[in-house]
Image 1 (cartoon, one colour):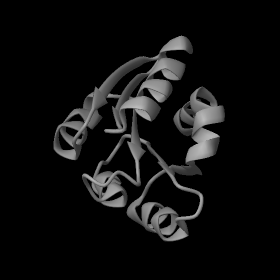
Image 2: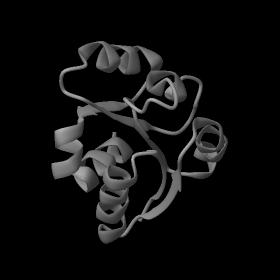
Image 3: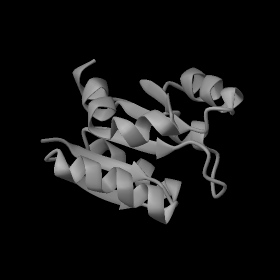
Length: 113
């Protein structure tokens, strides 16, 4: 079981990700804004970020979060966001559709790396 900090202000998709992680046995703390999520990240095993949220600059959230793997998910048509997240140091960056299908596997893969 891992402690997951989830930053996803999208109520429906965030609930889906949270539910899949809890079903896989993980403890999830969900955040709607980046500052509390970044502050909490060191107390968690992994940070999961919605990179396309309009409320914040998703790729920048992972920058400077040291010692905790960061997983980001993005709209498959937004390749610029994917590149920016990779440049910012995200461990894993996947399309939103893959995150929906393989939530626990994506997060567990980041933890194993």
